[in-house]
Amino acid sequence: MAIIMEINQTSDEVLKSIIKVRIQKRRQFYIYLILFGIGISILIAKKYFDLKMNFFPVKYLTLEFMIVWCVILFAYLISMLLTEKSLGKKWEEEKIKKIIHSQKIEKTTWE
Image (cartoon, rainbow, N blue to C red; front, side, top):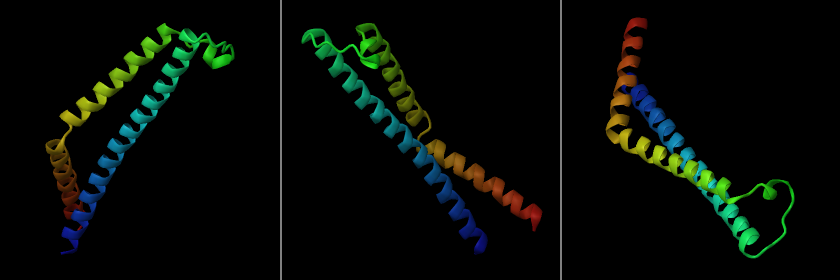
C-alpha cells in the first residue's frame, strides 16, 4: 500500500511540475504581449501625434523594431501552442507511466 501511495505522490508531483511549466510559459507570453502593447502605444504616440520622446529606450523604438518584435512574439505563440498540442494529455500520461515504471524498477532493485 505504501508503494502505491508513493507512486501516486510522484505522479502528482510530475503533473504539478508539467502544469507549472505550462503556466509559466503562458504567464511569460502575457507579459511579452503587454510589453508589446505598450511598445505599440508609444510608437503610435511618437509617429502619429508627433510627441518628442528622445530618451534612451524610446528613441530606438521604430516601425522596423516593432515588426521584428511582432514576428518574435508570433513565433513564441506558435511554439507555445505547438508544444501544448504535441505534448498534450497523451504525452503527459505516457511520461508519467515511464517515470512510475522507472521508480518501480529502482524500488525493486533496492529492496
